[in-house]
Length: 144
Image 1 (tube, rainbow, N blue to C red):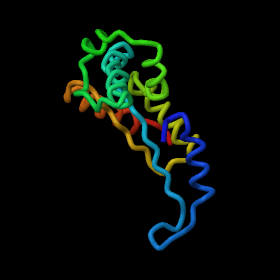
Image 2: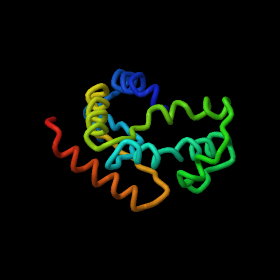
Image 3: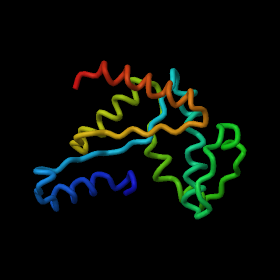
Image 4: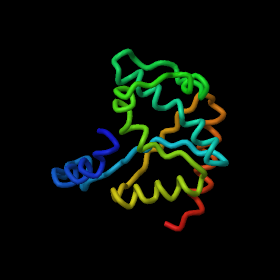
């Protein structure tokens, strides 16, 4: 499903759910694309290649290696390309830990999700690990 349809998809799933031997009640897992950094500018820069990477998949050419921020910045976008990835780029959470944790909390509340699946894709592995570390610390501080 696409991020823009998550509320409809969750509602439809709950309405159509039928208990089974495996699951007695609906279990909702919602995924979110997230990049966290110490400041908003760094987070946005680290997240900037995401659109270019999604474009490579959606254009039918297959996934390219995740670009660096500089490689992504060098791409000259057409309006059609921007439209093709807009739903994914606009729903990516990128920012400082506390702000992203709050947005994820809002997503969890809006969907009544049992679980959030956080995906962080960055060019450098160290940036990805740091993003998860910063988010984990901020998440622990939230008053759920």
